[in-house]
Image 1 (cartoon, rainbow, N blue to C red):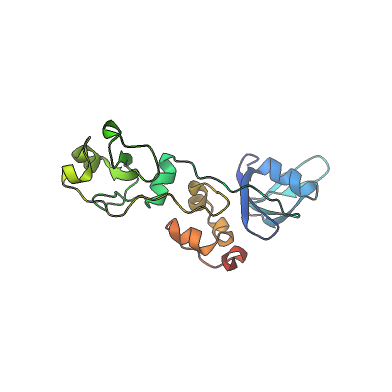
Image 2: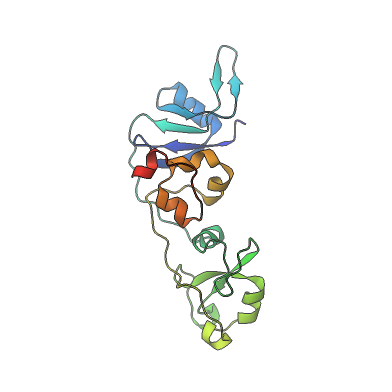
Length: 186
């Protein structure tokens, strides 16, 4: 439990980062953060007991430079909502496809990479969609930058975090919050 992820909120309740439980307990103990949600039990030392946090909030605002989204497999699949951009099938068994093949001078960029199921990727091969007689469902674009980044797999595995994420982030990632949290008003 000491290595479990904890959502770190900035002073205004907007997501700031993800840290490990050990670091979160130290931040709360030193007064640099306050406990917002604890749903995991207690950790005991010789002289004290501490609630294991799930969400903490920093007591002072921390400014961060704007986060640049990296072009990774998971980020592309998240942008495309785990949907093949050629046939529309929703699946977790996806591959990356270069719309303009690299062998024909295509770049490895947000605007040229899409999610494709293995069957469609094989069918397209090293050709453009027009040459293969296939049509893209949507034009690939660089995803909108929200100024912070909490990896997608944390959204799914920590439902108690969703109420602290702005509504537009949850909708764009395909998630539906149960109830709006403080960050939904941003």
